[in-house]
Image (cartoon, rainbow, N blue to C red; front, side, top):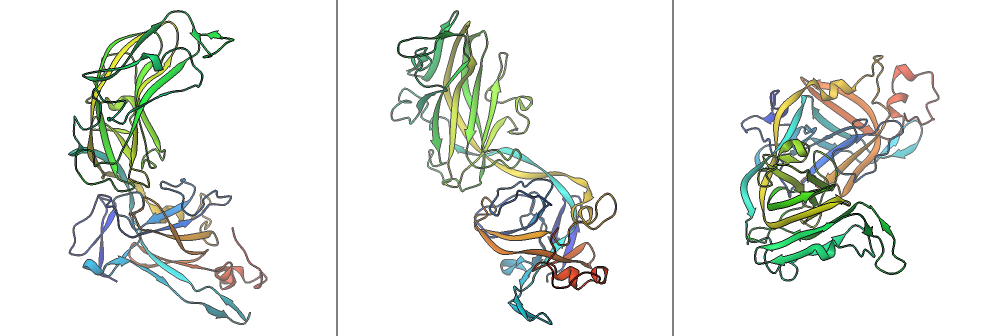
Length: 402
């Protein structure tokens, strides 16, 4: 195993002779160990972040719990994971799956944030928000309910500067587009949307799980009554919210769409950009429109352009407690991890998706074998308890699982 040292300030281990990596790279092999909580809902393949009730740790640096230790050096380096073959259990005389040992570095959990704006990925003028928006520009119009006779579809238009949404209603909407008509003060929404993949300005296609930021050229000329303008991105699970749809709503007021106020959506707006994550196909869908408009309302807004920029995850601090040590015992000092179901998973795309389960078993043993370094052993159910004197009074043939 390569020598390791601890960079506590960054919350990550550093292989001797190599600089700390505080960003999430994509398109490479990583692993994740999950030890589930009693009554768990975890299923292999679930996206990060997992619930705080589950113990989980990965080989990714600078993102969540990133401390499966490294074995080897340089280009030959990999996670410190060893998998044994099948073995015969004596004196029971049965075959069992081989054990898996995983070495973990116990450091304080990094507190991650997102920084946006380093590079322009899709430039202004390449988003299709021009006079051809509803044709060659690739934007389509959508409403929140079917069979609507009220505009907003009729409120959508386009001119040389791009698409716009403008109209008014005094006392009620017409709810149905065919007799018998129903009148009401229903709240309605309408939007335009387009799917992007990063190649719109001739650049490289986005990779699954890649984080990007977006801001907008919007001219909001008139708005009275209820309702807000909104921008939304749908793609992969966001590293902060865990949601695939992330949005910012612009209430009436003097908000700048090009430098979005973080207070409007602090979990997804960073450095003035609305952040989103490319899905498994490397794509993101953008929606721009109005939400929750009801009588009486007047609105006029033009969606003139947008720009995508690169984002990356960065470390801004560390938790007060070391992650693994904090999990060893409950509030009554009772061991709480041994015997729980455990999963070792593999990802081929930097952790954007977890596509393969390498091992299913139970956490049998936890050993502090070096300073700040734990060795976890996974195996079949109950072996740790059968081999421990603390459980010597129990039937050694029975299986136990927390």
